[in-house]
Image 1: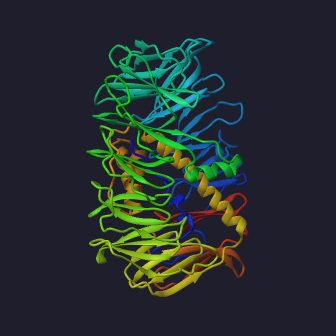
Image 2 (image 1 turned 60 degrees about the horizontal axis):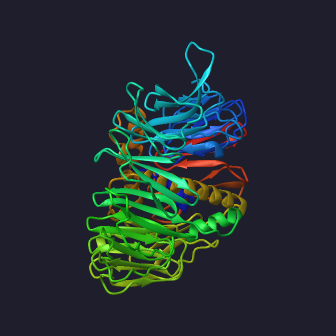
Image 3 (image 1 turned 90 degrees about the vertical axis):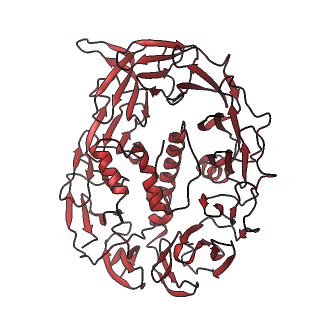
Length: 621
């Protein structure tokens, strides 16, 4: 299962968004509503969502009126939104004691599921999205047709047309306890008392399996295998089930340490990663610290497909949480958040003499011509996959850098890495590296968050800074515009952090069950976005076609950058030419804390110009 991340997550949301030509300060379209615009959010589908006093509204790019107004969803807050990665679907999550759940196709502007309209009593108690089948499964009490009473059941809905496929009746004492899965005509539903396999076509029960309180079902259609997972305290029990009759193929569940983080099918066994989380700092700050530092430890298992026993007598030491995990032809390659890369054969034998020591926070691992490139917070190197050693005998080391960005300069066959020490070039042929530019001299306590090769040199950018270097690393020009206030930047940063955490959590969830997770080639972020879409590229739906088209589109913004700053008459956006550093134009937003979004693919700026009005500027004019 492939998924994608919202591009705004990278601190490039820093408002360095480009345009092709000049534009007028007068808005091209004004969208006026009957109520106050409380918040607005540009989604990965290209639809701008906004909450107003009259409805939840959606605005598609380059249109003269909102594409939809959902007046039943007037008081939705941003924390109620749950986007389904790689799809046009938005789940409106329940709030407080209410369990009313709604699913929206935000490209069509159509409600494809509404628990009230579908007559689920007091909403649904649990909900799960199953891909790539595009099915939505809910649990609760459903009102039967023609009768005034409710019965417990699990509903299966097709998200492509919003229609109910079937309700599988459940006894009150055996409600759905976890996430089900689909395999052909079968839907396998975990329950408090057992696991039940139903025919989707007829609704008949095919078999039951004696596993209580399973929290997740994973199926492998290629091998006709079914696995069930049950949480037991801080540990997990794994079961294998006969897909034909429900018999347990392992004499008893295999108890493993930790909570499941990754599941991968291989012909050599079931590869699992669990996380054994240590208690750390408490509260919001603690949660962020633990995520960044990778608090706790991961454990890797390879379970025998016949017996369920761990095939490895001794699991490889990780000394931290695994952040990268790849199934290769000859074994398993993984990296740890606190630093270190290792490779283990399918028989449990280390394929390298010793794990490779690296810096913490490995941001990128990718194939290049000479081996595997990794980039961490403190070092970068190209390593040999067979030996685990540096291809060129040495790693590039630099100051600990939270923001490390890179690109490949194909005309000069070199990788460029921007870090706290400056800009390094790494020769793609011999691995030699050289510091071509020292301190980037960014102002406002910023570090570069993006590096780009342009025709005239190397462009570094951040929220408030732009610097152009020539290809030898000498500064050609530098532009800085002071941020209008820490409150605005702080709000944007925290929003980015929240979106990033959500996207990472969703991505992790949707990686489960993938048959292959091999290491990919080094490429640009734009290509990475496209690759996430390939998993859904063949779905015959207008919304998916539009979504794929958007992520394969050439950016409308190439030659200019927008920086939010304080102008003479108030806060606004400065348009800076990326090749010359010259200020081309300004948009005065007249607001100390402006609410705005920029669609850098379609070239549209959305701005809350009044309490009840959103103005749109066409940046391609």
